[in-house]
Image 1 (cartoon, one colour):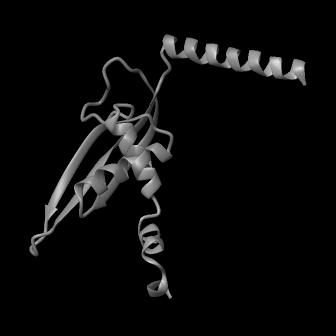
Image 2: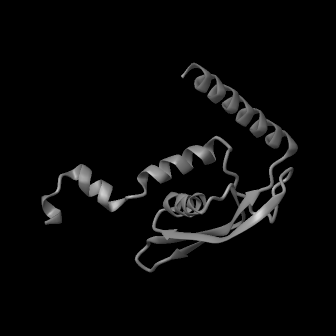
Length: 133
């Protein structure tokens, strides 16, 4: 019965992670999700190693962003130790493999202060709501 579906549903069924891919592409292109070939990222302290993430595909972008989306779904803030391989098949096609280690960073003092200020602001606004209610 799959052949009776409309094209939009077929595309959605073929790529259920399209929304995640778009989110990860935006994060990466805006510099908010670093991917490095080195074992660290300058200026950041790694606090949690979430493990290996990998993806394969016939398109390099599919493999790269598939790997990155798996890292984001684990809660990663970056990928370190990134590597990629390309296998060439006799029929002329290419098969891409991308892998790296998903990590989370320790919060910097500036981030801790910003988060505390945000939480304090939320607490104050919540207090105002409770007083008027």
